[in-house]
Image (cartoon, rainbow, N blue to C red; front, side):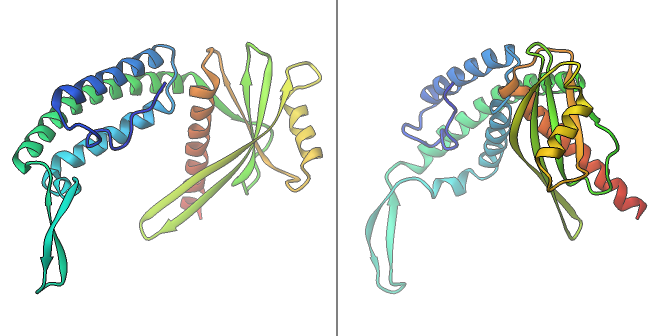
Length: 245
């Protein structure tokens, strides 16, 4: 589905009815995706749009300065061009406020629906270590099981931590490596050893397996959730180690 532009509220015609049509059509498609448990990237987009609307609500007057302007002359004392907006300030501010007041609860409602789906699916996904987790777990592998296809998708990950004053920042990067069919021969432990044999730069890597009893859309939900949950798990482990040290 087509994603909603970050600047949708100020693009083209700034008109309440027009923007209502644009937003409601977008949210209708979002609801369809959510009903199929397809969360990403729509859930993150909704959070971004909701936050942006709240900021606009608090800074409507500043936003007015970003609308198209045309030059009216030169101020010789200040040596700078002078402009005026091509739209009436009172009209545009009034329309923007109405659009924002209409949009915030609409997006918030769908955001809450997405949050409920997110939390339910998260509760149905498990992350477990494969073997002993080494002291250095910032780099390693994770396997995502697809039980219906009887496959394990293998990803390499690298976790970055940054401590700046009182803020702890972390980020997880991942790269797809390969796929294994599930079999007696290809147990999780066996797959880990095969990965180590092929990628020798990590002789004792942290390895995790992600599983779920549900059939979850892989690209749109399962994999993004697996990454977020692994990032949360590793961040928690890091904070625990820092506390002990």
